[in-house]
Structure formats: structure tokens, C-alpha cells
Length: 267
Image (tube, rainbow, N blue to C red; front, side, top):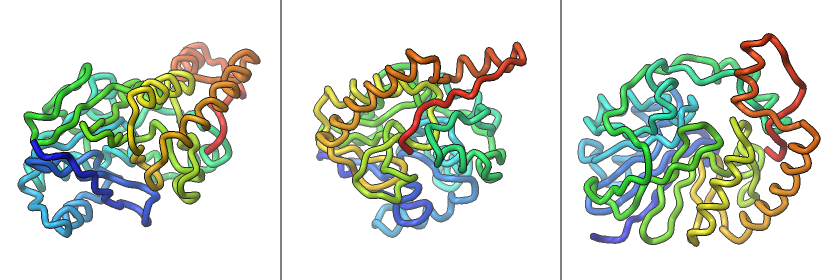
């Protein structure tokens, strides 16, 4: 099988929100942008000389509105099946993100007030259910889906045999992709320590580059140094009871309690 090439597909701005086209024996799309961006993504796929009808698969990295928002539309436009992890089936089937969003810092607190993050996407039923590592050779690319929970319970990344990691929101460029090349948390995490553990596990596999949902590709060595600092920071916050997770937020919702803790900072 030919080596897999990773091509960014801008959805918003030059790098603010990205999908990715994997080019091998057949093309595979990773992520589906915000609601209403299906035709834009289709046209940008075609601009790379790929017939959108040839798409073998659409992989969703997680159940946030800027990553699965146009999945149902793209499925209709291309005929490609959609792959999603079973732990994020709730958002996919309802079209609604699990709320409240848990900000990782000031950027997240600001973005959580944006009405566009609270809209309902068109629901979809993934045809390919991901439960563990999933080889994509049958879909035409030398790559595999790897569960990387933490950002959401059903977050996944895609690792090519050549070492390119399409990481979704496992990590981001600072300020929602505006500061290129500088690793940072994305605006939200459901479980910051679990996400960091997933990130470090992927770094241990020796990727050559991390292609992220928000920003340009990140250098693995720079991400490792950031992850070491982030581990110390999150450990201190957890010890001080200042690290909130999705499980805790849901428990608080059931009991009517609340805290001022954030998921983290650094976005």
C-alpha cells in the first residue's frame, strides 16, 4: 500500500478549524467541521484532485460540534460511511454536545458563551462503530484509528504508518490555533488528566508530526516538553481540588451542587 499523505482541509479561517484528507490507495476524511460546512469541505476535497464520491470513510475524532457538525451532510454528499467511537454516540445520535462545556482557561470561558457552540447539528448514526484500535487498510490508507479518551470519552486519533498523527483536539495550537506551533490545551476538556495520559501514550509511539483540529502541525518534541509542564500543573490543581471533570459535572447536576473549578488552563 502506498504511504499515506495528510492534507489539511481548512473549515474556518486558515487554521482555526481543520479537517484532514488522508490520501492513500483511496481517500479518507478525518472530521466534518461545523454545521453547514459540508459543501465547503466537499469542494476543498475536489480542489485537491480527489473526487468526493471516492471517499472511502469519514472518521470523526470526537463529539464536539466543530468536528462532527456536517458529518450527516457529507455522508449524503459523498456516500462515504461515517466512523465514530461508541462512547460519543450520544452527541452523534442527538446532534447535541454534552454540556456544560468545561473550559481549560480564559479562551474556553469566552467561547462557552458563543451561541454557535450550543446549536444542534443534524444527527447521524455512524455506520462504523469504533471500540478499540481499528486498522484502516480496508478503507485504502496505511493508518489506524486509536482511542485517545479525555477530551471527550469517545475521542480518537488517527496514526498513519508513516508516523503522522491526526490528533483532533488531543492538543491544539495556542488561542484556538491563532499562535502557530505553540502547543496548548484546546478550549475544553472533559477530563484533562485522562486527555494528557492519552497524549503521552501517543507521543510514546514516536509520531513525526501532530496534525491538530485547531492550528498548524505541531513538533512532537515541543509537545513533549509542554506535556511535562502540563503534568506538573494538572497534578497541583488536582491535589488542590481545582480540577473539574465531566463525571464530576454530571454528579453535581444530579445533586444540584456546583464548584468553581475549571478543567485546566492554557488555551
